[in-house]
Length: 150
Image (cartoon, rainbow, N blue to C red; front, side, top):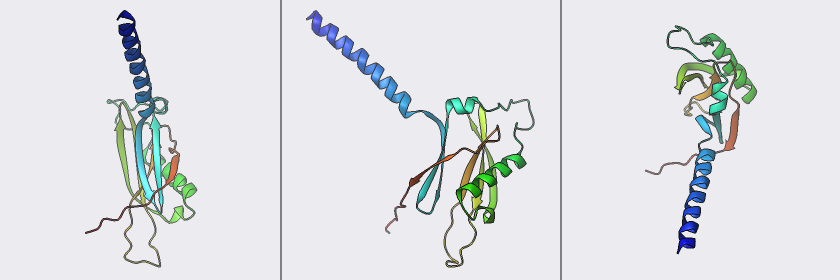
């Protein structure tokens, strides 16, 4: 009987440790932003450690460590790396997002009008820039949109 109880306790402790490790592995990102273009999903992921390496923006400071204009330049340059026609895209929005005690910018663009489709719907494409002036590198994964049937 004692051997069975000891085994049960050992098994329970083992399962707690494995569950804790799996939970940590699944939550390895502090933030994830997604953008979609063509048949790809662009995932902009930030780990907790990556965020900690960026400058804080203390409550008493009126301006963030990275200016909006500098964030715009970084985001625009990264968009040009992602897409051959990146210089033709239109800047539509710049937003600050708090992530814990750190902040990031999302720089939003829309693609240029297509000559083959005047009524095509376009979606905003967001690039993420951290307060140290670095564009978060996107992980690109194939993505097929699902169409709703009415």
